[in-house]
Amino acid sequence: MPPETPRVTIRHLYFHIPFCPKLCPYCSFYVEVGAKNKNREFLDALLREVERAGERFTLRPETIYFGGGTPTSLLTDQLEYLLGGLGSRLDLSALREWTVEANPATVREEKARLLRDMGVTRVSLGVQSWDDALLKTLGRIHNAAAAERTYEILRAAEIPAVNLDLMFAVPGQRPSQWRATLEKTIALKPDHISSYCLTYEEDTAYFQKLAGGDYRQDVERDAQLFEETMDTLSAGGFAQYEISNYARSDGGSHSARESQHNRAYWLGADYLGFGPGAFSTVGFSRWENVRDTAGYTRAMLAGEAATGFTETLSADVRAGEIAAFRIRMAEGIPAEEIGRWSGAMAEFEKLGLVTRSEGIVCLTRRGKLLADSVAEAFVSTP
Image (tube, rainbow, N blue to C red):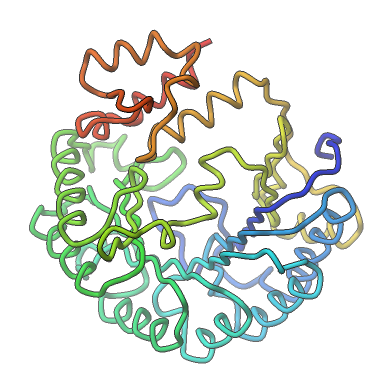
């Protein structure tokens, strides 16, 4: 069981929907291929977990996020059952943002309209690339035409906000291919763009290929692609408010298009995760549900615990985690909060990686290229 905590109000909820039509070779998230456990019992287990959480916490969400996996791999009637069930169990009067991750070709017109009508305000579409050859390399089941069609469906359904997920440093990717993907994405005018450098995570097919010499990392090339991303998206009217995230600025006002759920994570808000493999952090307590969809479902419906991991964080560790996220954000960290990291930040300032301006410590352009190294200082400094 997760450790006992005082009854507090939780304003940010995450739901892990682990189902995917295919396992992408670079993905390290807990996912399940196929439809064996994609059933009503799983949905009832999620709803039961919400009910049980409501017995311990006051649930008044301001943001809800459906991730995975592929939440939109659920059938339309399954989504209606789940979203409707949440609507009847939660106080949604304070809800500002409800995000659902989607993969191209898993959203038809009826499903898009359902998402809108049930209160979803934001869809994050996993495009990754507009190049068919690279999509095959990434193991994606869609092509560029299907991705564009899905985007059009979401716009036609009047989903209030759409994010497009992109990935660079794909094996074999040429700079011209990445440039074309950025330009096409800008032309579509999404509300938000998330652009990630591919990473080789352990226990993935890509990591095995890297270890075997089939793939290789080129740090200098990756940095060049990242710089081109920043420059191209900025010139295209997108403000970089976090290392990998850009909101359409429309003359300078972009805060309304930022991911409010992710901002809550980065700023250290309490959150609850529901579903197999989902994490929760409340105060200094953190726990993860079991990474087993069938086992999670059985436990929840039997009224048993489905917790696979728990830990108690020290105040210093939690503060370091939050600072590591905040330094990645454009707003930076107030200088008076640097505290025990002042020595490390002074060194980074000498190296030109961070700067202090009007009482704020933030990354320089060069620092953004080495953001992981700067962030590491916050979680490794005793």
